[in-house]
Image (tube, rainbow, N blue to C red; front, side):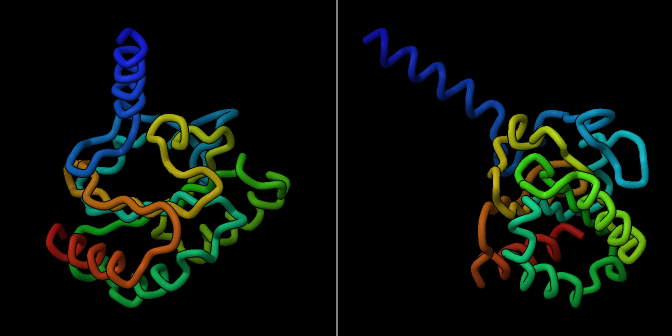
Length: 172
């Protein structure tokens, strides 16, 4: 009986850190040795408000997993339709590639896609804090008030893509 109680308590504690649809995740700051904005400075998850945000949290080795979704998202031109933003957080601790090489690529991406916020996560901060998939491609959509509308770890199916676009359009 005591083991069941302990297990239930551990699972309840574990779920406190997981992303839950309809809830605002716990605040996270990524800065200094842990990473931060590619442009420089800290990234704070409280920034995920006032716009509908699509966040890609990606292991560099899995960067192409949701390329179809990324390209379809780009074609929708949501920035022209309303308050929309995109964030790419790179899980730099999930790859064998050296940080200096990833940082050089990210600086180029930031110049090419200047309206996307690029963030370096050098210590799996969001894996630990929000229980995001490690060594994976994750897609999270946030409402204007910071609530999670959608979460997918792994390859987006056609149904996932349609649901994601529907949620974005309903919330812009």
